[in-house]
Image (cartoon, rainbow, N blue to C red; front, side):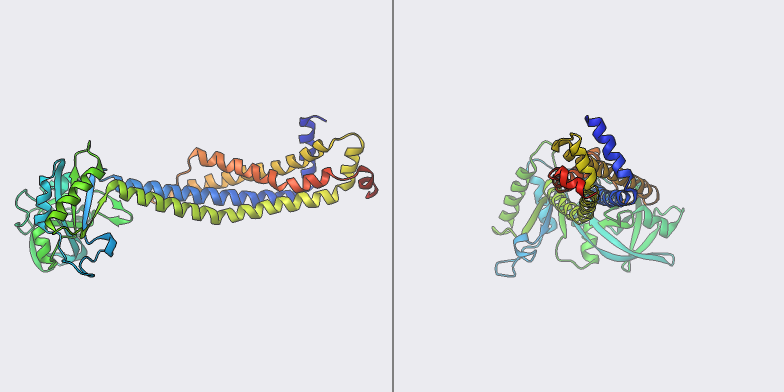
Length: 400
């Protein structure tokens, strides 16, 4: 009997046990669909988060007060605590390769106009924020250039905030109150969208000096630095570290984070989470494999006489083994294809009705899932096939 004949024999045998075969196929299909969907969701989330952070560019360095070695609390175990100040930010401009420096402070406050109001995030920044964060003004102007230690009570509204307070009216030169303090609207930002579920457009921007006063803060929350694209981020981080340590009496009471470091950490976290989720989904694959193993084992018991007859008319051990391998592989392949079909359908529905939920299914995952399903079938068929091949034809025929 040639290979094609063995395949037809295996398929005919499966048709004789449609219910059992269907349950085994369903088990593999559920397992493959679960693993594929969870992998696609994990990969989609990873790509989404990476894209959210890279939209601001790769040549940005963030400096925060407090050393990561002391959990952001410098001076607790001795030494002098040095705040990050506007003067620190301005001094960084002298470092070769630095293009822009943005001293940043922020807090939550209520913005009110004509009886309407809402509590949002207020960012204290400078004129350099536009270029550094890649933001643009749609209407009016941004914070005028000048000494960041001084500034007027002016505000630039995010488009969501502008719509909530003014509707379709022109907000320019209108006065709003932020935390009870009057600010004049001089601009409206262009839409930027969301970042990790946070509406960036539902915010407002004021001069950093005014923000420090408004929130009664002794220091900056952050300093963002834009450097030349052709420079090594680690080289710039080392220059910044040396410069600030000289200003802070030799203490590294701040934390420097490059965009590459941040993306690397996020990438590792998301890959770990994806792997953990896929491992949980793989349990259903194990259940499917056990289902095929059980079906094949029962099949050997019920077809003992049939196997004996095959061997009596000249079927070799290798051919008997191949029959059971083909049956197991056929079950797992059909289950794998069915599972991939389920996964594709669910992914399409998710994209259609929940576009904010990222689902990315690279072709390599599809091929890998199919290969895994076939391997599961073959491995599950090893013991039953071996047992069938070892049957003595005379003894097997006596069971009839």
